[in-house]
Length: 356
Image 1 (cartoon, one colour):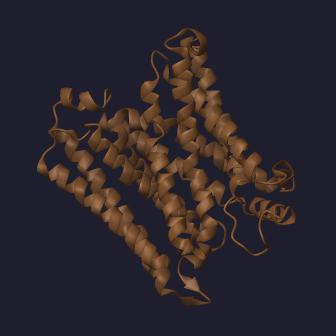
Image 2 (image 1 turned 135 degrees about the vertical axis):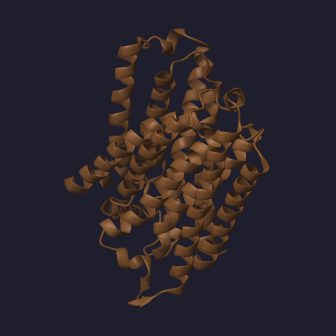
Image 3 (image 1 turned 45 degrees about the vertical axis):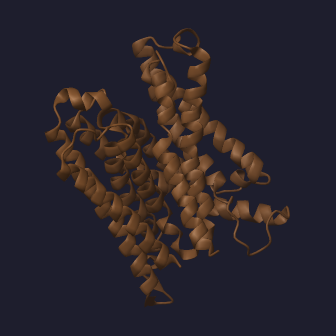
C-alpha cells in the first residue's frame, strides 16, 4: 500500500482521538471543572508523551538535550500559546457542544496552523513548487485543504441556524450550557491560539533529526528509511509550555473556588480518576498520530494538521448527531450539516488523490 495512504489513515485516527477525547469527562461526577482538567493536563501533557518517548525513542533525554536552546524555547513558547487555546477548548465545547464547537474551533485552527508553519520556516514555496515548477499534485492537495475549510463553513452555518431554530429548553437538553455568543468568542480565541500547537510541532526539526540519528545508531531503523517515531520528542517539548500555562490556571482556580479537596473527597473518586485520566490519554493520541504519519507523506507532510483537524470535525459532527445535539432542527439546518459532512469526506478523497 502507498505510504501516503497509510499516512492519511494515521491522521484520520488522530482526528478520531481529537473528536472523542472529551467524552470520558461525562463520566466525571461532582468534581469542579478545574479538577478533572488537571488530571487531563498531568496525564495527557506530561505522563503520556514521556512514556511514548521512553518506549519508542532510543536515548530520548539526550536527544532533547542535544537540541539548541533556541529551538527548545521556541517549541515551549508555541506550546504556551497553545495552552491558552487548550484552556478555552473545553469551554468552547461546554457552550457549543461537541459537533458545533469542534467544527468552528478546528476550522480556525486548521486554516491558521496549516499555512503558517511553511511560511514561518521559510519554506512557503513547498506549498506549490517542486524543482522550481508548479506541481499539479500540490495544487490538488491545496484544493482539497481549501475544500475541507468550505465544509467547515457549512457546518458552522448549520450551527448558526440551530441557534435561531430551537427554543432555549431544547438547546439545553443536548448542551446544558449552550450559549452561541459566548461560544463563538471562546471558539475564535481557542481556534487561533490552538494553531500554535502545529507551529510548535513544525519548529522541532533539529530534535526530530537527532531522534532519527539516535534510532539509526541503535539499529532501530535503517539509514534513509522512514521512521514514524522521530517526532515524539518534539511533542514532549511543546507540551511542556502548554502544561505550564494550564497547570497555573488550574491552581488559580483551586485557590479561588476552594476545590483542592476534590481529588480525594468528592464524588466517586476512583471512577473520576479513571475517566479524567482517559481524557488525557485519548487527547494526546491526536498529535502522536499526526507526527507518526508525517514521515510517510514526504514533502506533503504540511497537510497533516489540516487532515487531523478536518477529521476531528467529521467525527465530532457524527458524534453530535448521535448524542442529540441536532435533534429538533429544521431541514435547512440538517441539509447544511449533511452538505458540510459530504464536502469534508470529498476533500479527504481529493487530498488522497493529490498525495498519491
